[in-house]
Length: 279
Image 1 (cartoon, helix red, strand yellow):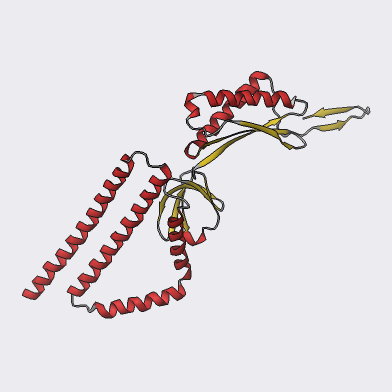
Image 2 (cartoon, rainbow, N blue to C red):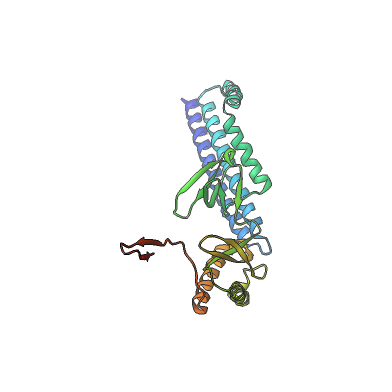
């Protein structure tokens, strides 16, 4: 009876210690996040990388604590965990031979973190999926797209990554001009838009270079495309692109620049030999 009471006390102690460790890990992680946010002079991508490593370490310690706690409780119940550990090793070898996909995922996750390919908070494109990285583990990457859908991508499936938040980006606005417009005049108008854009104090902090006009970049059967582009900070690319598009449309309307769009013209023959055009 006394031995059983001692076992119960030990089991309770193990459970309490495990819970305490999990709570301490969580509190420490929160303090680290707060400390990282308060650090001045650290680059944003380095800050995100540090947060990602903290998340991985927190997850690893929590899983280890729970596994050790379970093994200790089994030991207190009189279960010989030595064969269990040996069987786990054998099972691990068998799984290693059979679960090559899982091993590939873990290796892929390790390389993603080691090479700093992307971190939590980056907007990336994996194959046909585009979204913000919410979480990274050694096994998978969790993405959230603009519609709110979450995608879980095994790291072993990550082949080609497009990272929209890596150091710098480029805002590009293509303007479809109707045939017959003076291209030199249009280029001059777009150049003025770019000049005013770069002089805006609310915008200039997000620009890394002067806007440039190029074109025609496309001469299709229904349009001539001129391009206005500017190098931006990665975290402000979408904002700057939208504002640039807005200003280009406003100026083109003010200056009377005729923008083109795809349309079809149908000529109908009349019984008297004449023809009639419809659009």
